[in-house]
Image (cartoon, rainbow, N blue to C red; front, top):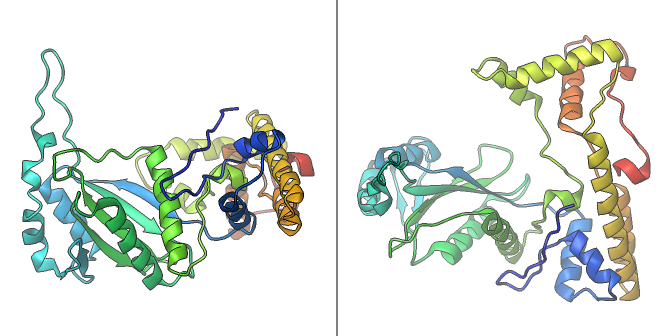
Length: 343
């Protein structure tokens, strides 16, 4: 199993790394107040923030098109880094002030014998989101603080609040090059830090929020939506369609689903549960008896382990039931249900 190192972000709050916590605990260590608070937020399943990078335009025209999209063709005002609110007719003049055409990344030349470099992104498109029913005004306030903290005085940016979906979210457009021509490089560690900082800012605005890796919450993957499969049926990609056909065939022939990858998932789940239990033991020794009980309950009630294949099978069977084609509950894919395996 890959080792995950514990590091401390600038705000001093430790990242929740349950495997490292367990190793730390086995050496007789004690959790700091910040670590105890983070464990408590996770065990109590506080809402998790979402910070996602969704791409970025490689031309000024593409950036203007994205501004038109997030502003719903001018129906929503765009808030700038200066605190101004601009309408659709001001988008072009606003972007002209960013001087995107002067971005050094647009003028990279091919080295001798090498292909021409791909055009670099002029902006980074970022989405900051919270689950329903978080008040949108709180999400916007935290997003403003996040943008100021990360980009003010370095990168130009603009944002738009969206409330037309269940999860209130803010679209943030950030100029890729700073005032000194340095490129904004966003990697996984930075994204993880951004999630933690956005969660901290949400808490500062009075909203309970958390930012932890999926694996420590027992979620090996994002829950697949059957709509994704249905959408691809009418698209150009047939990969997912073929996988669903294979799953349907196996269900029809055997009445169950067998996936070799399941054994590895179960072993990973056992390690996660064991680590949470060690953390609970340390909390007991520190006098955090109530929290230790919450941690043990949390560890014993993690979501079921499902492989991609099993997830597709479950979605397929739900779809059949909705269509009135399912015959009996026994058609559900076989899943190990023992506490030490799936929980």
